[in-house]
Image (cartoon, rainbow, N blue to C red):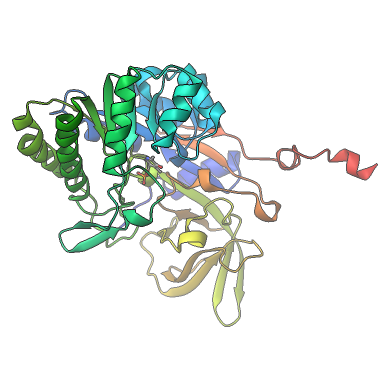
Length: 416
Ligand SMILES: *Cc1c(COP(=O)(O)O)cnc(C)c1O
């Protein structure tokens, strides 16, 4: 059973001030998730979470996470600008990019971000731009398939990211000669995992790698970055991850592999989905119903506000607010209004009977939701609202207006 974090009454109150559709975020939920994560890894004194900015690039949310001890993980120029504007710097910023423009490296360097190199050739390109910083990170790709037990999780050999082990060792030797003193190893091998074994399996692999690299190069490995990939229960039947069990299992692997080596290192994470995914929702209004070969409910939101169902066929749970306890005895496709037949939030979904004007709560849009939005069909991006801990709400991003949409054109000139 998945429950909304706001009631119909609250949603109506908000919608009276800020018309639907809008994304809403639950501050209390975000803070609790961050505190639990830090608690689960408190055995590792240097532990730090670098929230993946791309998941929800809103300054208010980033500041909340910062108050809970989190840094941020950026991958583009504008994400770095956001970091700079909010005063994140030094070891508060991880810069994990690929196919990286020169300007991006320059800005990362300006704010003293930890630069995570994606490729062997990047050592050369970056060292031509500025003297390499004392602390740098390298992204590892083990190739082959990545399995946990008998389950194949993903195929790193098909992923564009990271370096081979041989390249990492060659890169570290070169970087040592260029003055780098402390190294981190980063790896991201599977996305949205629902198993308490993903991080522990990845950590053990990286622990062995770190010990081996240290033996071969003498380099000081200061941290391992387990990156993102911990998933969330999008479906009611999904079993959520247990972050405390995950922390314990990573600790066991640390004691098994790292402690005997005499090394000490910090664990970093770059979680996006896990941190904010469940603490966001898209609120829309049912504005149309049509019955042809199927029964369709049309919303005032569309794939421009939430792309995951359209591009990944991702499941997002839907609650009709105020009808939480009504029987789900109607079969619907719930759609947006794009001229694109994949603009469907749900296909063949059993829901309570929906009336025009009902407020529809689409769950788990707090990560890779608003931020993936686009302007296809001239649809405008929605507002973002924060539900604060005291139950009050605050606008944290206004909705786009037609003027925003036309801002890159000399629009009036077209009518001369
Ligand atoms: C997208 C991304 C993340 C976050 O992934 P989640 O699935 O949201 O946890 C972390 N690190 C990097 C480098 C990424 O590209």
